[in-house]
Amino acid sequence: KSRIDDSEHLCIYSADIGQQLKIRSQLEQALIHALERDEFEIYYQPQILANSGQIIGTEALLRWNNPQLGSVSPEEFIPVAEHVGLIRPIGEWVMNNACKQLKAWQDEGLPPLRLAVNVSPLQFIDPDLGNAVKRIIQKTGIKPEDLELEITEGSLMWDMETAIKMMNQIKQQGIILAIDDFGTGYSSLSNLRHFPLDRLKIDKSFTQEIGTSSGSTEITLTILTIGKRLGMSVIAEGIETQEQATFLRNNGCDEFQGFMYSHPLPADKMTQLLRDGATIGINLKSAECESV
Ligand code: C2E
Ligand code: MG
Ligand code: MG
Ligand code: MG
Image 1 (cartoon, rainbow, N blue to C red):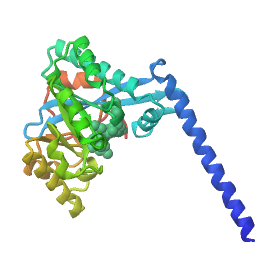
Image 2: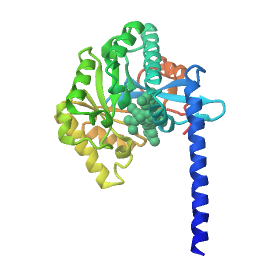
Image 3: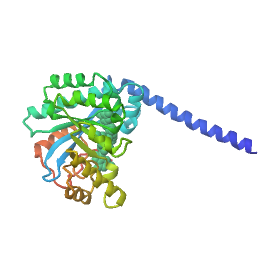
Image 4: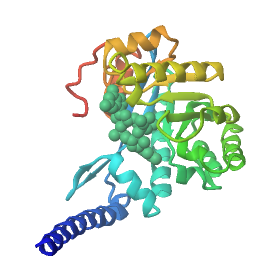
């Protein structure tokens, strides 16, 4: 009896895996053509000064819309892009187009804005990254100080010397360096001081538990303190409530990013927001925003 049970289990199990592999390979196949078929779009989420609500930056967030698969989350397709070796061309596409957009905002005379672009650990170890970024800056005509690269703890896991060398290549150009999703990876707190980072982003998993989990509240405070002590500017992502904002503001967090202020917006909606005035207060109405 138990043998039959076993084999049934095995069957169900392998059908599941087979299905998963099929979906995965569909995703890979579609992703290979996504750039040439112009299926990507960049959304922009405002970053605001904690004390004034002034929009001083924006994070470029990639969106993929495929005719067959619909809209696929970056949480899902970025790892696939990394796996199949597409993250470099896709990453360059994002950087190039986001910088072009920033230049268009500058040329229109809108208030100064810093542009943050996410960089995967696989892009980060590319020895040509520094040159690629330099070329894009020159071609689009933005200033290096307008550009911020968000790396994750995964990029700190390469040997320290190599990581620091890569960072210096970027920093020497005047580009701003931020550590994203801080506290979710495996990098050690004590190593942080060796890296030439300008900014630290508190991960939304901590932000969102402020006030509800004492553990997360304490970790948030600790991350804030470490960032400040190391001379970094600290930004919190994932702010959704007034309570979170107040707590973070009272504890010295410099900048905010979250749905409470604005969802990520398509370029034309972001342009409209900037034209309407560069300050956002509490609830920005989300009628024209991305649905969650
Ligand atoms: P991330 O860089 O940590 O970006 C922040 C994510 O949090 C975004 O998700 C954003 O939409 C979401 N978010 C912002 N505010 C809130 C909030 O108040 N509540 C909640 N629940 N979420 C909020 P998104 O756009 O889905 O991107 C997910 C991740 O995909 C990014 O996390 C980043 O790691 C990656 N990603 C996105 N675009 C790119 C890209 O161009 N290149 C690379 N390498 N990775 C990217
Ligand atoms: Mg980011
Ligand atoms: Mg983040
Ligand atoms: Mg995050």
